[in-house]
Every structure is written in C-alpha cells, then in structure tokens.
Image (cartoon, rainbow, N blue to C red; front, side):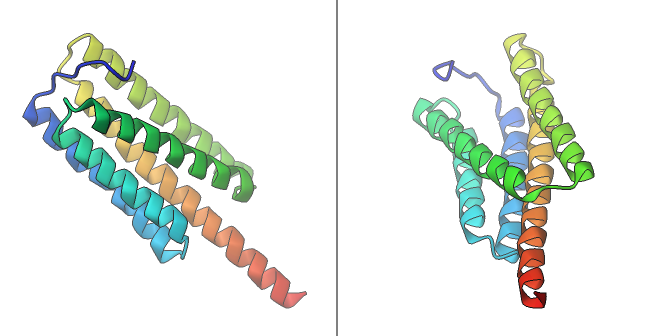
Length: 154
C-alpha cells in the first residue's frame, strides 16, 4: 500500500504543499497554549509532509510521512479522550474525523481513478485536520487551566 508509485503533476503538488503548511496552525496554537510536545510534533509533521510532497517519488519520505501521521493521530486522539468531555465538542470532533476520513478516502479513490480533482479532496483533508487538531489543542489547554484554577480555589 505504501509502496504505490505516485505520478503527480507539479501543479497539483504545489497546492498540496500549501495545504500541508496548514499544520503550522495547530503547531502555533499548541505553542501558544504551552503544549510544547504537541507543538513540536505538529512542526515535525509539517516539515515531513512538505518534504514528501516536494519529492513525492521518494518512498522513504512517504513512509516517514505516513508513520508520523500515525504518531500525530495517537497524540491528538489521546488528548481528545482525556480532555474533551462536553458532548457538543465530542460531536464536532467526530464530525471532523468523518470529514478527514472522507477527504482522504476520496482523494485516494479519485487518484486511483486518475481524476484531476483528487488533490482538491486531499487539500480538504488537510484543512479539516488542521482545524480539528487546533480545536482539540484549544480544549486541552482550557481543560488543563480549568483544573489548575479548580485546585487553587479548593
């Protein structure tokens, strides 16, 4: 699955590189909220993703990108599980996850069918992921600070 040879035109790759840079947003939010581990993880994610799309024929870069994406998913899912307790927030996260899976799946399907719109779905996947990861980091920060305030009051 990972060893699949990609044939991507530069016009498509440049837009995916741009959308990969959206991972800087959650990295910035994590840094701003003093979630330094998450900030570093997202910064590395941005670099690996951009690095892969600048040379998309390099399978080692693809493997690193896919492996690091799994690390990011684990970290974000762990934060979701620990720090998001509000049902409305959970619903938003689940809808975002559906959007992420839909965008990624459709980009793969359109790519396999050799449709020119595949990269638009991949960009959609990047956009929704950046939004939802930022949202989870925001709620993580709020939860941790609420607990600090609660401990001071008690």
